[in-house]
Image 1 (cartoon, rainbow, N blue to C red):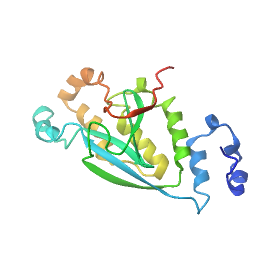
Image 2 (cartoon, helix red, strand yellow; image 1 turned 90 degrees about the horizontal axis):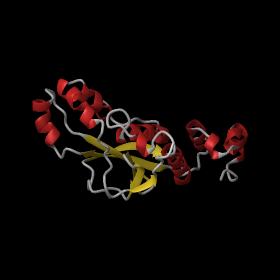
Image 3 (cartoon, one colour; image 1 turned 180 degrees about the vertical axis):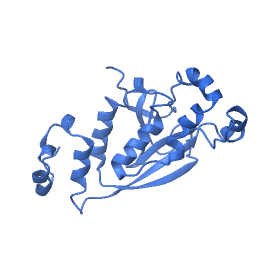
Image 4 (tube, rainbow, N blue to C red; image 1 turned 135 degrees about the vertical axis):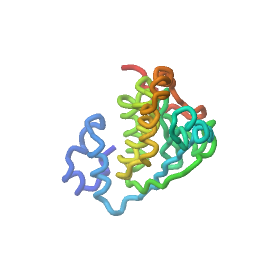
Length: 201
């Protein structure tokens, strides 16, 4: 797939001729910033409040602190929405899960990574770090996924109030009491097509 790379890139980064399983994220990205003529693609973050507003009203009573939502996020690029859950990495048309339209859309920036390279990257993640059986509600969830993908594609992170949510919940006594129950929950919004289930070690 790399036979059509610009000569300057192939010479500067000979590792691009290696098999894709030996290419790391930096190899992918360093190549694409070399050519000023490459098309740029818009990257968005879709944010959903899984509590449908209930967290805002109930969190002061239950947790003793204000939470504005229970956040699920997805990356939108190349006309598709990509997210991670208990079944692995999935995709759907933007807003196409049972969650409906997002509550908020954040513009993350632009990327020069092509859709082909992006899908190779997702396939690699789905076979390793983001297999379905590695999902953990607090430590390794949809927001962990979108934060990593956002940085790979644009160099930008997702909003900190989203990535900080687990620590906010677990810092409360009630959050600690609920943790054994919440740890067993795998969130996977219906309506997506699993890219790679990756449940086998």
